[in-house]
Image (cartoon, rainbow, N blue to C red; front, side):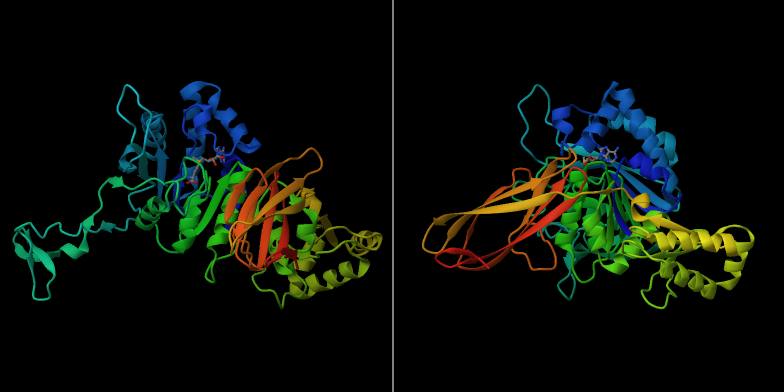
Length: 511
Ligand SMILES: C[S@@+](CC[C@H](N)C(=O)[O-])C[C@H]1O[C@@H](n2cnc3c(N)ncnc32)[C@H](O)[C@@H]1O
């Protein structure tokens, strides 16, 4: 399952199985000063900043190295790693980390990403490139050759090239002792290790609004060259989600981690903006979850998700499960009830269901005093608790009741109100409206940002403004009916949504 995970990538990678991902791209924070490096400014990112900054470059290298050790472990034999860095630390990264962990013999390329941009005047040359080190896990790594087109006129002036009877430009390529063969200009040239690509500029559609966002084109080349469809792409420093947005478009599976709530939520919204009929479902794993959202989630989605959080495996089909929704890794049945105050009858029905579905396992669990099944729900009534005790005493049948808040910590989402102010006509056709969103949190939490969809279609939130920290937006509208969706996100990643329906026609009304 495609997954976005909030957390320190070191902790999360330590729980991942060995040799399960095909391609890793990482763009870790540079070793530089705070003003330069901090993108999101939220608690998670600052914590990570403090983690690696305190002791200078040695400290930074040690911080990154322990992470790259985990990346090496979870990479498949045919897999590759692309580590994106720059002059701040690239020498140390290659010698102290990559050569040592992956081995010099698995060093494939030092890719230079060269770009143009304005830099401040200084007493040295401008820094106009980044470095991407490509290492493979073994000699069996995947490589799909990439080509680029020649310019319109290239080759045609070169006397080696001629046109064939179809008008195609080609030249003869000689081979030792064999017939020469034709090389066509239209096949382009093999790509080298210097990649000229523009950085994301101010007007780019992909732009999220922070300086180190990487262009999709760069990730496209990396992913196409070193993985195949359905492979698993992993980005442990997901940032604004470029890697996984591209992985999704190229039909790869993906996992992304970031320690910043803002990064994870911005990535989530970016993915939902890009969604189409063929998009695969994905889950977002936070530290805490909102009660109402879980309680009202689609039943099957809730089942699969909570079983996954519990460490089990959910059924892939919704029907025909004998009331068993999944299993633990030891094959113990799990039932999920998305409700409160579960009664005695649920326990009884479940005990018959587990007996019916696998009698041998059921008998064996009773004989060996093992847990025969789990029921997961929001809360359990007295009747259920007594019934569980009775079954254990009289039949030695052990059923465990597990509350949702024992599996995932529950929190409260922010409230949201949106005020609108009509600024009147700006010309004959357009009317200006000001929106003022105000999110309120409890328990000492705070608001991180707002996201806006000014053309909400009732189904999919598609953010036009991805990360607004002010809550204030001004928009002009033509006459007509409009649905505007606003989201507020707090520092635990919990969100609330408000939908405003406006009818604009000489005046502004809600409908
Ligand atoms: C340079 S950005 C990545 C940008 C990304 N490649 C893109 O194009 O949007 C680095 C990211 O690493 C995250 N980060 C820093 N330390 C981390 C850690 N220990 N675990 C997970 N994420 C971390 C930061 O929050 C930040 O979003």
